[in-house]
Image 1 (cartoon, rainbow, N blue to C red):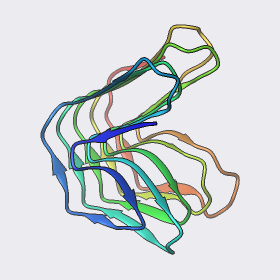
Image 2: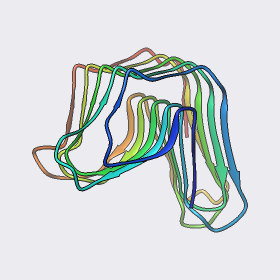
Image 3: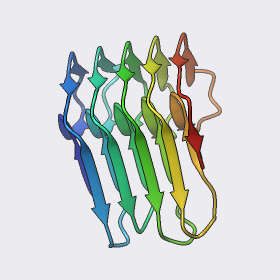
Image 4: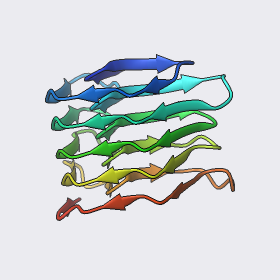
Length: 171
């Protein structure tokens, strides 16, 4: 896999608090590898209870272009951590995810690109960047103003008090 971000590419078992990214982030891979790309954090994973991502903001454009699945977010690309809480985070730049492989989806969100874990909550967060997904093989798209995909049917997975002023969603 390819993991890239403005502050930390991979944050296993650690909180990320009060972090800011001003740089533009680009992840490009021609290999059949998943791409995790975020303005502040590429990906998280945790066995820890109550992982916290708080008060983080991204000002730089975020672009992932890969031959496999792409998990791309303005603040965080992918949360593979159960019981993670993203609170008071913001993205004010464009986020684009492109996949060139058959059967692999591009996921993109203003704050979080993708999560399939239970107990993930996105609270009091904001996006004003444009969100776009492109899929050369037309297998599907998942652009979202706050989250691209929040994929868990548990009652503990939710968004609350989030705002997006995005003018453009492409998919």
